[in-house]
Structures are given as C-alpha cells and as structure tokens.
Length: 166
Image 1 (spheres, one colour):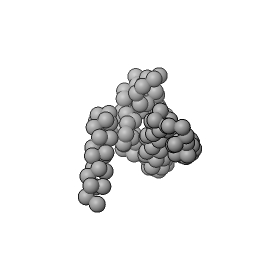
Image 2 (tube, helix red, strand yellow):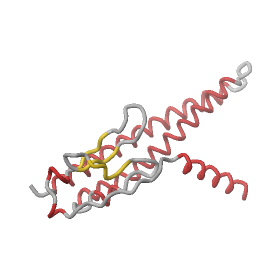
Image 3 (cartoon, one colour):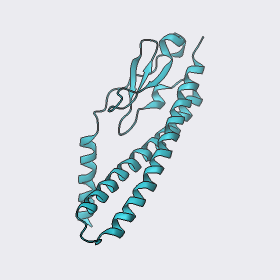
Image 4 (cartoon, helix red, strand yellow):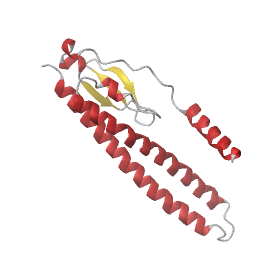
C-alpha cells in the first residue's frame, strides 16, 4: 500500500513540476473607479500553437489572469458581480475535468502506440483496441468539459462587463 502512495506522490510531483509557473493575478479595482474602457474583461489566446489563454482587462489589454494547470482565480478577477462570480465558480470544475481527461487521453494514446509497436502477431490486439476505444471516449469527454468550461468563462466575463458603470 505504501508503494501505491509513493507512486501517486511521485506522479503528482512530476505533474506539478511540468506545470507552468503560477503568476500573480491582479485584483479587480473598485467598480466605482472603473469605466468600460479601463476595466472590461476579455479572454484571448496567447499563441496559435502553444500557450494558454489569458484574461485581459481594459482597452490596453493588461493581463490579469493566465490559464494553466490550476486555472485562473477567476472569482477574484470578476469580483463585484454576483452572476459573474457564480459562473466563475462553475468554470473551475469543468476546466479541471477537461485537463485531467485530456491527460488521460494522451497517456492512453501513448500506451496504444507502445503496444502497437511491440505487438507480436496479434498478441496485444485486444488491449490496443480497448485502449483505443477508451482513449476516444475519454477524449470526447475532455472536449465536452472544455466546451462547458469555455461557456462558463464567457458567461462570467459577460456578466462582469455588464455590471461595469457606463
């Protein structure tokens, strides 16, 4: 049993070591001092191939949160609008499940590739087939969760922007 705990701890440490650095996120200025041009939020991709999206504030696009393994602290960024905070809370579990399912899909796909390369006259055909089907199912689940997370962050940003003084 201790070997299992140790292997889980090693795997968790490896995942955290591979994670992008956590960056400080700026708190939301008071609503009274904000205008739409200075405080409205938007989510933008940071790179076409690599890199996580970022939450930007104002016309000049100051980064206030960055996505990563643990996701942004969106609740703090959208503080001031109860509806925005509620959608920010709904975002986090979807994003977490999408990330975990995506990692599982990647590992299962790697296992399929390794088994296919070491396959001797159909010895591992059933395992390759099962891993392939499992990978497709978990990958579809990851996609669904990612879309739900994207919907929640879009709604959170919309509600936050709606609450800004005009």
